Length: 191
Image 1 (spheres, rainbow, N blue to C red):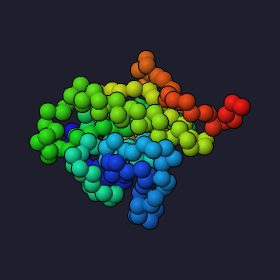
Image 2: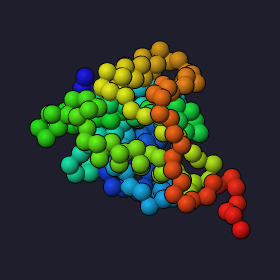
Image 3: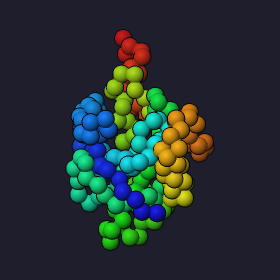
C-alpha cells in the first residue's frame, strides 16, 4: 500500500501545528509543555476519518525534517496505539515510498528497536505537563493491521459515519506512561 500523507509537524519540532481544515491553513496549536521533540515528521492522511473525529494520524521516518503542509508519498509499516483523553488513538508509522534507504523497512520488525522506543517514549511523555491531558500506551501492531486501520479510516470518511468509541485493541501490554518524578496534574505535589 502506498498513499499520500500531509505533514503538520516536522521532526525535531516542539511546536504542535495542526491543519485548520475549515480555512485551509496550518495553525500553531501549542508549543509542547515538555522538552520533548517530535521523533518523526507527523501529520495525517487526507480523506480519512479516525476514531477521534480527525483525519488519521501518520508519522513518517525521514532523514531530514520537511515542513508543515508538505505532501509525502509513504508506505505504512506499523501502527502505534495509544489511548488519550479523546479515546483510542492510532498513529500509523510509515516510511517514504521512494526512498531507497527505506526499501528494507516493510513491517514492524524492520523498524529499528531504538526508533520504536523513541516513538513510544515521545507519546508516553509529550503531554505530561499539560493540564487535563493524558496518554496511555497500548502498543504496536504490524503492517497488516496498519493497512487495515488506514482502509477503515478511508471507509469511515467515505460513508460519512460519525466516529464510534471503539476501544483500541487489547495487545496485552497496556501501560500508563512513566512519570519519572513528575506529579499528577490533578493532585498537588507532596509537601
